[in-house]
Length: 324
Image (cartoon, rainbow, N blue to C red; front, side, top):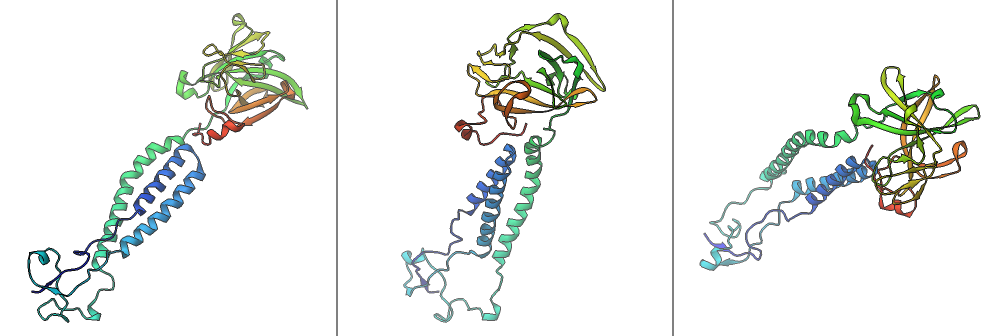
């Protein structure tokens, strides 16, 4: 059999592609968005995932590499033997036969096998990855909401002074969910009770802040809560603000930072009055408070972790917050 030498050597497969890399980037972006609770990030990842996945599958289905180019016959020898392909039958009688047009496959077997392998691999990947993804990402979306907490009758919160309320945020979790709030009754405004309820979590690193004033431990009392654990209420007197014993953060009576490393005001609790009882509903972060008591104007934001700015230019550095 006569051999020939082509300019590009033997037949080769599809050229290297960047589509798998784009597909992997899209998957990563989508998973990061799920963990951070950012649906805009999830959407971007999904678009990348679908776009790169489509062009990748299309290339697999249609790309088979360039066919070899046949030159004029070369004399047999060691050099030509290294890059040889059979001649077509219309150029040499001893070469392989040429297929008729009706015999040529319209859908090559190699493309079918490639797509079948890709599809089977996708199914197997889904079966393996789905449980792992659910266990890894699921906790960020399940059971993250705050429960309503009854902290006792409104009559137990006299007007003017802060009361230290200690309670269980999630009774089913036990003592690990114990929280402390500083509650001040501001009186009645427009026929409705007004309360200032501050979290004791320092917004520097999360240490418990204390009242800058007298804590009347001898007057502490326990309040029964229907269908729930008891709540401890400790009166205070002459409170001038709050201080963190860990790193010296200081706050005024509205929770505004006055000194030290904290980056914003103390977090607060939302509340409602139901059947004469004070019910905590959810927590939120505060950038700054203008005014005092019932007249205060609160710049409220979604609950953020300690040391995270919620307003001002610095907030740009903290674009995402995981669900709380």
